[in-house]
Structure formats: structure tokens, C-alpha cells
Image: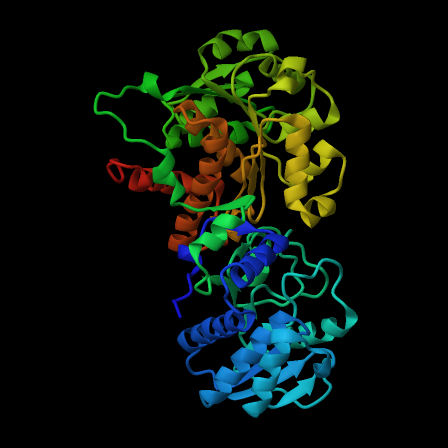
Length: 519
């Protein structure tokens, strides 16, 4: 068996459950790999992870469901028994109802004299003691709410107090959407097979999966070529692919001019953070259009910025004439000042990054949008779930129930590039392009100002010549990666948006081709 890939070396392609089933069928029917062989390889891959990660685990409890996921669990139990482990299987449903390869695996476990019990409600049945729990209850087929007979087993898994390895996907998590469908297993690690499931990386997926491992079960590459994946995973390896080398005679005029419009009374910091993020990302010039009262504080913090006090939309005219890309929304407010400035920005022909109050004003219909912009808008919209809900008339819970569908709905209605923020940020650029799932970032980013920094990063990249879709993808990746570096150095709790700036600069210089690190 090959060594399973870890989170750091995962493939890029992400699949729906039906696409993974197509991969399975192709491997079995067109390439002649027996289903039982794939099941045995899956069990061996999972047991290999157990041996490497939990080598001292002696008491192993394997929870098996009624499908092929349960069959994988029986293979693991047989291997553990043969390795001298004290292993017990807890099965949901009647074992005599098992069919096909799963039944074969169960009979092999019986022949290996693995003790087996029917599903246990919390506190019922023989007392279970475990050094490790294997979750092989529910696989990728679950769509609706978790059935009652599985709920008790899942709750038992979570209350045994031992580390948990989930097989293919934590039980109770939807593999297509990342939605939690009732009680769900909280795994310390998840090993998934043949194709990565997109629900592992967004919504509740990152919270439930723990470390993700992948094994292709030695399926030929031609199998994956037969089934197109409509989604891709993005991480920091994207940086060198999109950022080119800077010529030695480069000057600021080559790297664009970002204009940040925002910072109503009490919110100057939002516009400042977006502007500084654009500068730290490498934009040649950065201007800020904000309330006149904010100019002294803004320039005291960052004198490299060009700060302009604006009181009415006409004040933007000379600034728009010099800009390459505009960020509108950070601290903009929703009163007459903000509405007027946003209306003028929208009437320009410049590429835009719209965030925060710009999105709220769009959702409320408070600003006019020219028909030409609706036909071919040149913008990146960066909503969090609440803003996305307002844009299409839902609530935040409905957004989180299917983030992929919501990102597509927003993109279909408003055009351009949609970046739906959250755990597993999504980037949907429409036009048949794969949806991107960003796998950098950490819970320390749940603090004020992070979205302002992201909008500035995207604008800074677009100013340097990246297409808006690439600027959004790379911007989200480096935003999360800078936060990961910061959390690695100082911890997640108490992470501030402005803490990202030095790490952002280091990251881009470390990874960009031909760049001088920390230059």
C-alpha cells in the first residue's frame, strides 16, 4: 500500500458523492479492480494510520454501519485482531442484512474472532473502554437527517473519551455540502479514499474532520481522468503559480494604484486596514478616500498612504481617474454619504472589490447599478454568510446549509466573482470554472477587521495585473496562510487583523518565484 497523503500533500480535485461513486464504478467495471480489493486497501490504509499515529492504542472499538463504510470498519477490525489488538465491533442494524463486499468483510472479521455487539445507546450494553475509536458508521451516501438508530451510536463515539479516526467522512457530516445533519462524530483524524469529498473542507467539515488523510487505493490515474471534478482545493502552493518575478528595473507605476473608499464616522480603521493590506501585498500606490476628520490619524499610522478627505461623490472624480482598482465598503456606512460614494464607484468602469456595507447597500437596493455592469460586472463580492443571506433573501442558517449553492446563486444573480467567507472559504467565478475551496486559515481569524484586510489583499493583487478570479483565489489563500503563520508563532486566541501584515509580506516574498525573502 502507498502511504496516505496528509493534509499538507492532498490532491486538488474535490468531488461530490455521486462523482466518487462514479470513480468507484469506473475502477471496478472498466479497470477490473474487484470491489473487495478496494475495501481491503481502504482498511489497510486506515490501519496503517492507526499504527503510525496511535502505536500504543491497544483497545480499539470499531463502530460499523450497514453499508460499505461499515465494511471498511470490519476490515480494520480484522487487521487489528491479527495484530494482537483488543478490538471490539459495535454494529448498527442487523448484521444479517449486510450485503456484498461489506458482508464478506463482516464474515472475515467473524472468522478472525472479533467480538461483535449490536448498536449501543449511551450507557447501555457492555461497558466499552477504548484507547482509540474507529467511526465506520455512515459514509458519503447520507443526505437527510441522521436516523435515530445511528444517533445513539454517534453519541457513544463522542462520549467514550478516546481519540477518533473517521473512515471516509465523519458520520453525520454531508460530504457534498459540509453541513452537519444531526449528531455528528467529532474526529481527531479522517482518512478518505479515491477522491476527496468537498464537504470535508467547508462548513462544519473543518471542525469535525480533524487532520485529513487521503489514499487513492492504487486506482489508476486514468480513472480520475474519466470523471471531472467540479471543485478544487486551494492552499499556499498557489502563490508561486500566480505571482511572477519582479524585474530588477521595476517601479511603482507597474504595480497598480488601489483606491479604498470607506471609513465613515467611527470606522476609519476599516478603510485603513484595507489600504495597508493592499500596500503590504505589493500594490505600487494606495489611496484612501474617507471622512476628512480621519486624515491625521490615518497618516500617523501609515504615512505611505495617500489620504483624501471626501464629503460628496464629486470629490472622488480625480481619485477614480488615477486608480487601477477600487475597494469599496470597509467602514462605508449606509447613510447618504456612503450611498453617494458607492453609487459613483459603481458607475465607473474600474475593477471593484466590494465588501461590508457596499454589499449591504446592494442587498437593500439603496444604490443604482448600471445595466451594463449587471451584464458584465467587473467586481469581486466578498460576503460573509450574513451578507450573502441578505443578497439573495435567505437567512444565515440557510447559507451554511449549502454554501456551494449559495455562492453559485449569488454569482448567478450579481455576476463577477463571489468569495463566500467562512471556514472553507469558497470562490465562484462562474463561466463553468471550478468552484475553489480555500484550505488555509484558522479559528483565530474570528475577529474584527479580517474581512477588511482580505478586501485590500485582493485589490492589491488585482492592481498588479492578476485577473479578478485569480486575485480572489490567491487573496483568500494568502490571507489564511498569513493568519496560520501568525497563529503558529503566537497562538490563535487574541489574533488581530493587523497582526497579519508582517506575515503577509514574508509569505509573498518567501513563495513568489525569484523573490528575495523578507525583502
